[in-house]
Image (cartoon, rainbow, N blue to C red):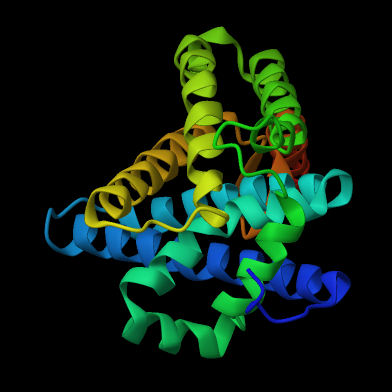
Length: 246
């Protein structure tokens, strides 16, 4: 620990916020574009690219909202925790990490100092690894309630999301512990990688099924405004048609 570089926590916070948003955009564009192209041109499903674009915008907006709220309430621990997979990526795939580093400005040494600053305890299951999740958990429940209210229970996977949420909390707590306890053997590294993969899958499922946003006509809207907007659009179209007939 004495060999870690000295950092300015405010500067590193800004760096990690930038990196978090940038990686969210890069990963989302890569995944949803690839899925849309494969579905449309290999599986021959028409409209897949357009559907993937809508899903991508909704996903980025929902996850971006979580990042924004958490950074406002609990910035240091949240950023240290959610950047842990990036730290593990640098630890295992150094070559690819250096390429990504030119974009997201990630520095493993500075991140290690930042993580020690965020999680000072040496206990693997310290409460600090759970506390930073409180804003995101509260936001998830609020988004789920909003979707149920405006879309109805049949269009919301309420039970599945509520079952997934405790699993996400445990996975995130365990994964964030690797920010200060670097894997020292192959078994620990495998555990960290598996945990990162499971956490990413569970979090993506929760984000997709609690997103209060939807993309319509290249505009981002709340799901509760779609019906009103649609009715207004239809009324406007009828008025235009009547004027033309007159």
